[in-house]
Length: 261
Image (cartoon, rainbow, N blue to C red):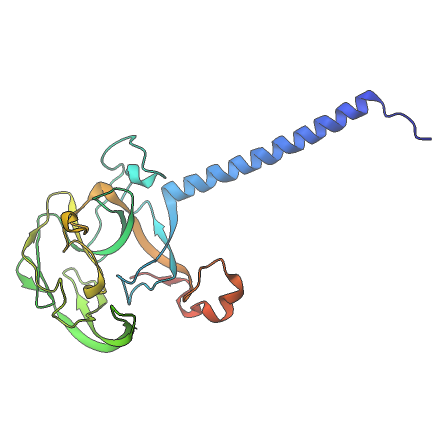
């Protein structure tokens, strides 16, 4: 026959259980706060859902974006609360940076493009060639890249090494050659405190060449900048990242930990 459990023993057990629950909750809250601080002030992960930056970034790339590179705006905080305007500890992006920003026409969608035009500059595209302040930007043909065209067919796209003023050299592709829909534009004069963005996949990028009224990006205010793309930490072909059983043949191992340039 079992002996009765003293009342104080039951109370101690309950206090122990309550203490364990509170300790677990405390650890979870602390972990969430640390993650929030890191995400807001240091680095934020993003994945690439479209091909507008091919060949620099591929669909299925996962990358880290440095939040501190350009300072902080309300868009640095999750859900973009209207706590303040402008930027704190602001630093200007450099031409050639690959930047994640909030789409100006809705201030909620995340886009990623390359900075090609700075405040006050005049930007134009004529017959596929980029002009900045009336000067044609040099490019040289290199080995073609295989990629999907607008109909999902694999094609060899004309590929070039383009060198922007300041010395940043990067790869662009022209799926439609130099006769694409946005390969001939008017002159865009970038307003103060705004930037002109373009995708490296020039014929498959809705960027600053397309106005917000036309469903495009337009000029991007500095307040909308989230951060600079730094490094690809994961990359998977044709599958969501959570399908870990597909990793042996779907992960692009050659892209892991690759700097973004």
